[in-house]
Image (tube, rainbow, N blue to C red):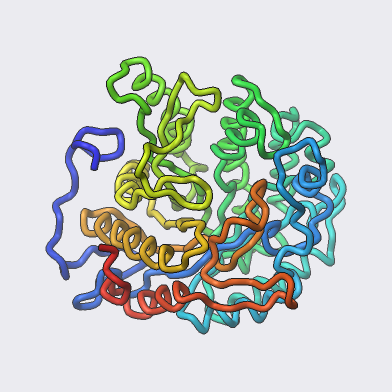
Length: 437
């Protein structure tokens, strides 16, 4: 736990209510007697179009996957065929206690050429969102989840001079055609990671390693969030918009080194503070999505700017350090925006599903503790609903509550963790999950 006064804890925290006392919000209502989460709390899981749909041949990620010079391990191919199986997938999730679901729209399907919008794609996503609503699943719909149409990428992507104008055009069309079926809109997914992975580390498209451009892209994506908020207000319905940000718990690799500590603060400024402090003014949105996976050590002496977790620290298949209390600390930091919070991604890549159950128990306990400390958290969406394509890592990492047999007609099989998640979603009680020990 970080000491009071750290960048992740407010200097004067809210009083801690006793277990069972109410922590209320306008949308969630009071706690049930003895429950850890309030009635009306949103429970669900998340996917992204390119990771599950299959056949997204017209975006920059498809090109990246098929370029042997890139870091991509394999092609997304058919995904998990969610494009055709979304109805059965939503039925399965609803049957397991989910009352919300996060997904994304594939921009390259909707606008396959500049200014050319696909009626077929828009009709498809209208059917998808209707199917969600029909099953009682509250939709969190992401407008940009990592992928770009090839034509947009060819113009320079987020570095193009008209990037914001083109993104606004896409968002405006989505608002008109689909806004009435989008109660929650996630504008831009993990802008820091788009910038960091794609323009500094180079293992996501466009594969650039430039110490200046990644910062420029990050600021452009923050502006893209505001553009999307404005656009969504021009269409149908009354979507509530939020930026969704991945917020690692950053720490210096060498705590006794003043230079390393200072560099950690610099990186925190670029990866965390830029996006949270930038959420002010009229177009900041209505809520904030918090995505948390790991504690991460910063090292200015490392070619990658980050250090491997210390020996003995538990890590996932992704090499990420598991640190449950980091989620509580990050929720405190995110709350400084004054916006209601939803955990829009949180999960672990592991072949051992018992690890996933433990991860759920410890991280949901962290969410419950943050709420008991006065933080306004209104929902939790686990990453991910299904084992799926994990970007440059391919299909090796297993994040899903539900396994998919891609060699046997994409058969879906819920894991024990899916049933554990169902128990807590239906009861709102941490006691429905095993003690993480």
